[in-house]
Amino acid sequence: MMTPTERLGLDLLVSVDRDGDRSLRVQLEDQLRDGIRRGALHAGTPLPSTRALAGELGVSRGVVVEAYAQLVAEGFLVARPGAVTRVASVARHEPAEPPEERIAPPVRFDFRTEAADLSAFPRRAWLAALRETLRDVPDVGLGYGDRSGAPALRVTLAAYLGRARGVAAEPGNVVVCTGITQAITLLARALHRAGVARVAVEDPGFPLHRMVFAREGLRVVPIPVDAGGLVVEALDHADVGAVLLTPSHQFPLGMALAPERRAALVDWAAAREAWIFEDDYDGEYRFDRDPVGALQALAPARVTYLGSASKTLAPALRVGWMVVAPDLLEAVGEAKVLADSGSPQVDQLALARFIEHGELDRHLRRMRGSFRRRRDLMIATLADELPELKVEGIPAGLHVCGRLPAEVALGPLMAAAWEHGVGLYGFQHGDVARVLLGYANLPEPSVEPAVRALGELVRTAG
Image (spheres, rainbow, N blue to C red):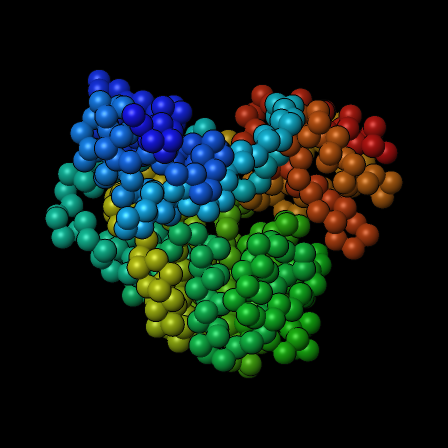
């Protein structure tokens, strides 16, 4: 006759399927573990002996012994010599009630600004570059490689940036990273090593970059921006050792740094032995003239140039680059090693081949024409549908910055926009509210209806 403890085996409600994909031991473990988590088996509950449970299930005693041993090791059961195996005092898992799901309206028009036209990504050309890379790369090329970047890509980037952006680059000064955000993280660590405690940023500017500097322990000093870009003379009283700016197309307001201020900024850096970090996030796109060359060419010893593939190809590639000022190069390289031991080698080699074959140039030629048409159409439609929105900035980049009328509150406008399926983004700076209207991911036929929808929302909000 069974003891009460052995009788409990009949109430465990465990079973095994000999035809199942999982082993008998794993099936038993999972069912006991689940019963404990659900509270069906309470703390202190005695379990049947291994012999009794094995007989009930029709399995070998070893299956039960191994299952009990695994659950003891995980902390679900307690076993002592000469005593009954019991359920341990583990926290019962109470499945959380799923929150009531609120289905957001589908986004009809998305004015996002953070990426190039993702639908236009040159998949065929990229796949060809990737295939050729995997075909040709030697076995040794599949290792970690140079932590500062694959030599082939560093050579290719130095040549491309010199040709396309006027950067004074040597392959040895190029560091490959995952994007501009990582570049700024590495530079912040290099500043610490150089004894710099305060860094200047544009105000307004990109909030994430401020957060990175602050997270790395640097004091962030905002410097005002006006129609000529960063107010360079304000740096004289800021007591900073470095400044981050977007001189070719200020983000988010959209102006270019005035020529006289470019020269003044370089003079300031030389006089203070300070560093300039040039974020060239969308410098390839200028629609009224040839793009202005990189600021870095004026002072390669003081300026570190930053770029990425996010606005030219796609953020998903997670590829960025720095042309690092020589005195910061060692510290940046060490920070990169400690951050991730180097960026993915195969993708770097594929990008090098992609650029060398002229695919990036071809892609950018196509996209410049497409983006210019979309921008021109957006400006014309705004003039007709929303003349009270003041457009700011130069004809460049992938977004238009628009100043809202004083009577329109930004928060309610953005909330209403999303409720109506319009992805709208904006910011408040002082008493002025602005919206950012990206056109890279608005197909050309959608530009006019998107602006009309925005116009209706602004008139309702006003």
